[in-house]
Every structure is written in C-alpha cells, then in structure tokens.
Image (cartoon, rainbow, N blue to C red; front, top):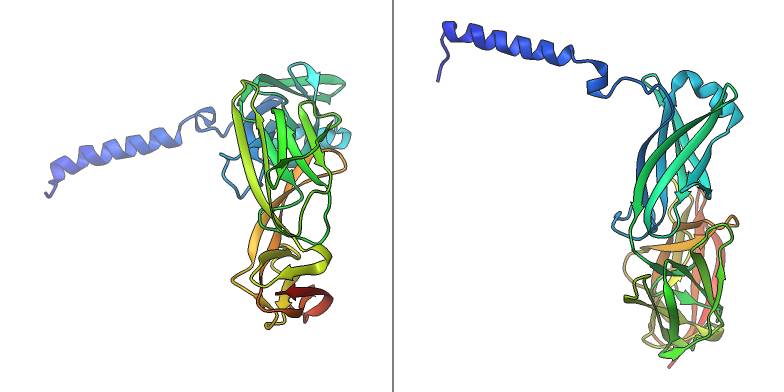
Length: 331
C-alpha cells in the first residue's frame, strides 16, 4: 500500500522523535557510563577442558571480572594490591589479564571458590592508602569431578607408569584396572581445600587396558567413568592392534608443526590426527587443560616397525627428524 503525503509527515516526525530519544538517552541507561569505584562485573565458570569446550563440562575455577575507574589504573597496576576472598577467607587466585576503555579499567582473575554451595566473592584493592571493596554472590553447583590426569582415552603408553586422578567434591573413591581394585594414595592439593590427587601404582598389562574409576557426590549419588589405555610393553604389540601415539600439539599458525610417519608396511598410519585434551597440574597446584596430537597407528603385519617423529619449527623451514620409535609387531 502506498502512503500519501498527508500520512508520511506524522510518520516521519514520529521516526525522527524516536531516533532523537535513542540518541539522547543518558549514558547510564546504555551501559556506557564508566564505573565510579571497584565493581565485580561478572563471575563465570571455567570449563575444566578449556575454553573451546562447552561450559556444561565440569569446572574447578571461576573467572571473576572486575572494573574500576580508568584514572586509577596506573596506581592500581603499579602497586598490584588486588586480593580475593571467598566467604571471608583467602582463596587461591591468579591474575588473567587487564585492559581499559570507555573511561574504565578492567582486571580478570581465575579464582577457586571451594566446595559446592552459595558463595560471597570479595575483591579488594588499595588506592591512596585506602582499601576499596567489591562484593558479589554466586553458587557453585553440586557437580563432582573425578578425572584422569596427564593421559587421554585410547593413548598408547610405552612405560607401565603410575596413574593419577583429579578428585573434587567426591567421596568413596574407587579405581579398577581390568576389573581389579587397585590401591589408592590420596593427597590433598595444598591451598585448594576440597581438591585432591589420587595415585595408583603401575597396574597395566600389555595390550588394551580398561580403567574404571568411580565415586559419590556429597549427597551420596554414585557416578563412574571408564577410559582405555594401550600399553606397548617393551615396545611390542600384536598384529591387528590399534593405538594412538602422542607427539606434539597445536601451536601458532607459524609453527611448530609435528608429524608421525609409519613405515607403511609393518606399521600403518590411519586416518587424520586427533586433537586430544589432557589435564595437567602446575607446580602451583592449579589444574589446566592442554591439547595434544594423537596419531592413529595400526600394527599391520609381523616384523620390525618404525615410527619417525619429525617437527617443522616454522612454516618457512623444512621438517627435521626428532627421533624414531622402534616397535616389534608379533603375530
């Protein structure tokens, strides 16, 4: 339908008034007014498997974002007086970045909030000799964590090593290797009350191994997980065995790049390289996720097989042989 000139004028005027109203809104309504003191702007769970994984995965730590007036920044950053408390008690935290813009500065922290339940987070800094505080509440869900450390499902191990597991908010823990209970040595992680590391003695047999680990949440509800590990004892495997050999991991677009080449006769590389997530503990006690490459290998026929592990340190350079792995394939 065509709008006549008599109708266009009030419509145009209404649109102009609406646009003026939008542009004349106070900065506080649009969210652009800078903060006037220290505030906690956001508290988000950090996926245990890293940022590229769904937030539905378990979390140990939370990202606490703060904002404060930009004209405080030089003093705040030079003195570095930030502290983080949870329910009135000091807690482990690490600075994870800062920035500024629009008249305000920002600082982010990884914070350990502790056991499940409602929490009050308090962040403080010192300016002009006075302590400035910000508070915000959040809830840590009742979601226990029990995970294998340092390895991934389907990985090939060349040593029968002790295995470690991460436990958080879990009780009545049990680990079975190939259906048999194994002894657990549980030790708390200093400074991170509620997090512990379980260690089992070397318990793998040559070939495929099933590791089942289970526990109960604080309410008594049982849960369990299972992973498979392949043990190439004395670098020996059998015809038909399939396993993942770990070498390198993703880096920058410039490199380094990692390659595993099989001889193609006794050993055959199969399929694309898999990106696998592993959990590792830092010397400071924090648990972090990393990505490694799992290379799919098939023991094709009996004989002496060779894997060549090479690296290209930069995309402009050629590959260099890092090492070779000799594997005997038995009938």
